[in-house]
Each structure stands twice: as structure tokens, then as C-alpha cells.
Image (cartoon, rainbow, N blue to C red; front, side, top):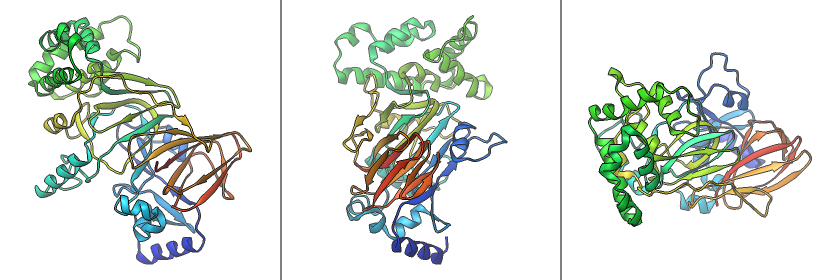
Length: 425
């Protein structure tokens, strides 16, 4: 972007401040779906290219494009040119003059990796260490591409399946004992008497020892566990349903084939983690250290501005077992399912225990209106269904806008409509 174009666009906007239309940037990761995001943004996809994520933020990897007087300006450059005006003085001070959140639409056709996100402190240390070693920031074996943590919240747009956090330890033990090929792991690491009287810390230690054993086991040991298990599952007369871990184990084995017919150790995580089936409008929050994986479905996702992911299997991408193990939280519990709380302004708020972001949903019937402000900081809106008018301009399904700090806006539904809003708490 030339300096003159940026300057002229910014001056034009400053003369008539208002909501700025955004064009999201698509990430074509191999696991992405081929229909939902192209239909959402009105783009042909006759060659069935994977459309995995639509980014609506300032991350330098793929900043959204702000459209001012027909000119497309990378949103990160627009914010950098006038941070106080775009973000507000308070946000500038708290978040080093950067938009603190990254807003996405995601479509998982295939399973994503078994993964975890670091804390802020771990990200700062890891980023500095990789910089010192001279690892290129776009290198495929790089763990930390920025200095930030990546807590994230999401809400399902379709039926959605995922793995989220370790199951209660007693459930893991009972499950392993019911699976002949995994019974030895339960016998060696999960004695029933110990679990029944164990404190939270003691259960965490048992989980840590079990998971470290699995992740550090030689490949021959992984194959000895999984090859007979998968062979037995393939001989079953009836295919398991999606609410059965066996379904995802078979799907993972078919998709993530390792050279030499070896088995991906990430398959074992499917039996260790909570298998969650979300309905549209339900979601979860992924804190730092929570092991998780998206399995199938579409969602809106809001996170701190970061692309730091530590992977433990079910991926062709870089896996760093020691760093993963050093990052994990070994709490064993069923995840909290988020359904939102009604706010005074009529929106449904999906809260997260973080300072960087808050996700909310606005549903309107045709003719209804919604009054919004950006007193807390900048807001990003996307129309997920229907058609609305915002400050006199029409926005159809898939349209997104950025509202700088200090603005008020009015949404009027032209049809029954649904919008998701990213902002600060």
C-alpha cells in the first residue's frame, strides 16, 4: 500500500467518520470446507478449493481489507496510521496500539490437529528463543510466530464436533478398561483405588504421567496399541456414530496415514479428551493449556491476535512434543458449554475471562432495529444471515464492517437477520 493511498483514504474517513466495510482474507488450509465460506462471501468455488478460515482482523499474516471510497487498505496499516482514532486512547495504552482481537469464520471439513495454545509468558519466551536461534518467522518448524497468547471463544454456526480438555479421569480409566487394546494403559497408570480418593493435584499427576508416556512412546509401541484396535474397529458390522470416539479414531486413521503404515499417536488423544457435540448457538472457551481439536463443522471464532499453535498429532504440520507437554493443563473435567447471556442492549453475550475480547450475537426480525456504540473500543460486525441496513447502507449475508472507537451505529433488519459482534468487554 502506497503512503499516498493510505493518507488520502484516512483523511477521507476522518472528514466523514463512519463504519468501514471490510473484506476478510481467506485461509485455504487443506482441512477447510469447500462450500460454507464461499457461499457466505458470494465467491465461486467451482474447483472446490478448501476455504478453511475467513480472517477479519489485523494479524500481519492476513489482515482484512478496509474499503474507504472504493480503495482497499490493509486494516493493520489503517490502525497503525491512526491508532488513537481507530482504537481509542485506552485500548492504545493497554494493548500497545494494536487491535487486541482476531475475528474469524471457520469451516472444518476434516479434523484439525490435536493442539494447545501457550500463555502470554510462554509466548514471549518462546518467540524470543526462536528469534535468537534465527528461525524464520514463516518457517514450517516454527512454534511461536508472535509474542501473544491465544485464548479463544467460538460459537457454532452448524452442528459442530470437537475435542476439548481431558475427560474426568475416572471416565478415561473406565473407557480404557473397556477397550482391550488400551487396558494395559489403565492398569499401569490409572489404578481405580487411587482415582477414587485422589485430589485434583493427584489426578493431574496421573494424567501427566499417562499422557507423557503416550506422547514419548516409541513408534513401535504406538503401532502395537493402535494397529489391532483399528483393525478390530474396521471389522465391525455397523459404523459407529459421530458421538462415539471410535468414529473419529477411524476417520483420523484413514486421513492421517503415516509412511510405512504407522499410526499417528494423536489418535489416542481422541479417547482421552471430551468429545463435544455442539448445536448452532452453542460454544466453548479454550484457555491457554487446554488440549483441543476441532473435528467438523462451522463456527465464528474470536481470539487474541495471535497465530501460536503447539501441535501433538493428526497433522502434517510441525509437531513439538516437549513444548506441547510443557504447555498443557492437566485438569480433568467436562467442558462448560456456552449458550450466552442476555445483555441490556438486546444482544446475547458469550463472555470469556480475558481482557482482549468479547463475542456477542444480535438477532433481529425484519423491521427491528439495534443501537450500538463503540465506547469500550473498536467493534467488528459480520452478518451471518439475512440483510440489514447500518447507518443508511445495506449489508447482505457475509458482509463485515469495522467500527472505530467512539462511534454510534444503528442496525435495521431488512429481513430476519443475525449478526455476530467482536469487541472488548
